[in-house]
Amino acid sequence: MRFFIKSYGCQMNSYDSQRIGDLLIAAGHEPSSSLDEANLVILNTCSIREKAEDKIFSDLGRLKIIKEKSSEKFLITVVGCMARLRSAEIVRRVPYVDAILGPGEIHRMADIVEDISGDKKKDVVVSVSAAAADKFSQLSDKFFNRSVSEFLTVQEGCNNFCSYCIVPHTRGREFSRSVSDVVREAKKLVSSGVKEIILLGQNVNSYKGEGRDGKSRNLAFLLFELAAVDGLKRLRYTTSHPKDADAELGRAHRDIEILMPFLHLPVQSGSDEVLRRMKRPYTRAEYLKCVDTMRGYRPDMAFSSDFIVGFPGESDGDFQQTLQLAEEVGYALAYSFKYSPRPNTAAALMKNCVPEEVKSERLRVLQTLLDKQQSEFNQSFAGKHLNVLFVKKGRHKNQLVGRSEYSQAVSVCDNNISIGDVARVKITGMASHSLIGTVEQ
Ligand code: 5AD
Ligand code: SF4
Image: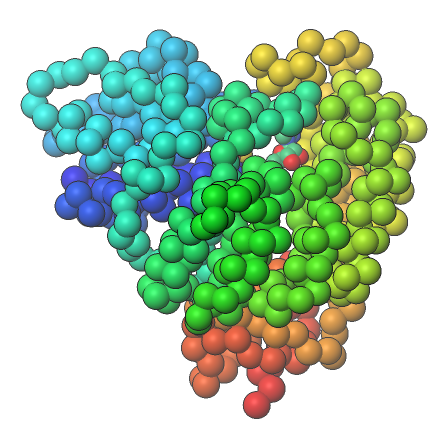
């Protein structure tokens, strides 16, 4: 069949979507670059906020019309977090879906497609119960269509149960892949042309994978192992929990040349009271100390964060503390969201909900500050040099777009540079969220 995968939500979903693609290609199916040409659509869904789920239900409504009009067999499958969380509701509201697979069952995709593509009309196939532990060993060992920079999931699931978060309910408890499994996959990626690997985990720095000697190994150990993979030019990892960002990780940043000086360290709120109710096990002072420790090892470390505004009971004073914390850290990049109650989470039962208009206003104020910080960070490189890994073609003739060590998008126009090269670039200008430069010969 000709398949099209639409991925919603986080980078882990992008990784899973790629692995589903590998499985389907290995089974003889053909990837399609647009929905119009496909006859198998896979929605890899997200439940992190209510808005994400609403969007997916509305996309499913559109797919129904396409399915009805289609002259050939047209299959719709729903996979990922929302599939796990809302399978019964999906079957009820969207009975024309052919299969529903949770995030821990994506390795079964090729078999399921085989099953549902037959002539007989079948009930919706629903398989959502497994957590991640089994899936990695059963994914395809073939990699198709990789680009210069790719994700590699090393840890999945979460044991923290932050009071607002749905992830422990969708991805299950923490599971770490073994060191040798990760290194094997990294080598494969590099041999298929990948130059930068971004390690993924819901709590990537609480990675505890089995080492070759049977001992449990942490993320710093894994990073040192991966740094030795021949041909790998850059390493990154995300998302880190502040409780596990320790000195050993700092030392890895100091000692591993290919480990980029960029740390995504979500703080969520700058108020101790809100952090306590969010069940985040650190105070604002501890978070700031962690930032300092990391800067001690890597003075040029750039930080990014996630923020939630309008958590139940968040006062104006709490919100001011969030703004002050952002001022103190000076983020290179940040994502901020309005709190969205999620089913079966502790926060969904909390009182003192913040009115929608207050949430919107706080989000506007915070985003204005974070945007300003991002532009200031970018502007601080005017006239300076950055090492850029070029990852794709730009829109203009001879234009290439890449990423700096600090994850900024940088574009150049140069005939002598190819995708996959790392070059020293002098920054000559700025666009809204990116930098423009010239390659130093
Ligand atoms: N409401 C709003 N934002 C949320 N996030 C997680 N759960 C929720 C929620 N219920 C945000 C957090 C997290 C990011 C991936 O999404 O900031 O770090
Ligand atoms: Fe969304 Fe979280 Fe699932 Fe990623 S892990 S798809 S962010 S709910």
